[in-house]
Image 1 (tube, rainbow, N blue to C red):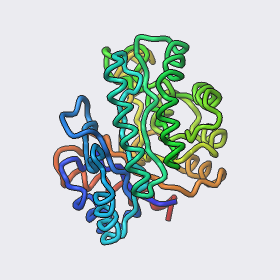
Image 2 (image 1 turned 90 degrees about the vertical axis):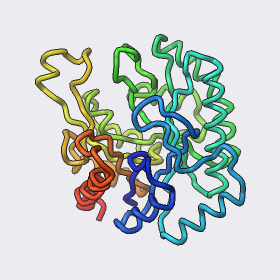
Image 3 (image 1 turned 45 degrees about the vertical axis):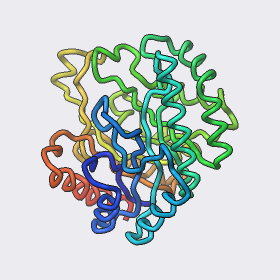
Image 4 (image 1 turned 135 degrees about the horizontal axis):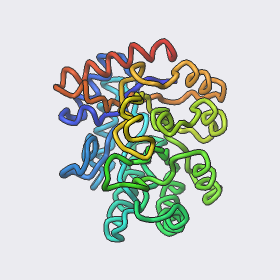
Length: 302
């Protein structure tokens, strides 16, 4: 396995600064964020370390030069919008940009693009799968043509009353992953596996890895701490009773998780995703979060 990090936490750094930091700190790879340039509509969104809107062969060569200089690889390109947004025009805009990300990955020789399936929060699961069948074929055809696999992350995207009760991502659990893969059995579609999203759904991470090991194309390393006092107050149907933490500071059983990854023969990237508010006060704190996470995870990766 290769240890890296998700570049979103270094949003105020240039691509070259991100790669230099990765090299100096001993990281093998980075997942680069590829949002359209502009204002973010939520935390960790809107980060553009690679602008793919007009990504030429010359731009790709320039990025590859930086990778060679710093001896760091790109684990994946990342873009995490809602491709099933209720607004058809926004859906089309999102999918157009996702296709640009896929094409940029192909130019760079990067084999994975990470994203969300999306969801209309007001729709049922069945209604959303009908929408999946309408929206996703052209994206999957583009990925197949480019030789790129799509890593679907399984965060429910449920953080506020505005997203209640469905969240903004339908592919959140084993039953729904099975349904997704059955819907597109031959598509270049896999999982960007993050154990933190299963902790607060009370889903067995190790069992999920063992069932879907052949589908895992990328891994995020993020922890999740369940606040038992808040959970007591609001119950599982409430909000705010689980919080993202650095690896080792939450409730993920990391030994069991990595045991499962090795059992299924996973040898790909493991990228730290920092979303811990306790480490967001400054660039130095965010960099420290990556260092601290690296030191913790090296006991499992070596």
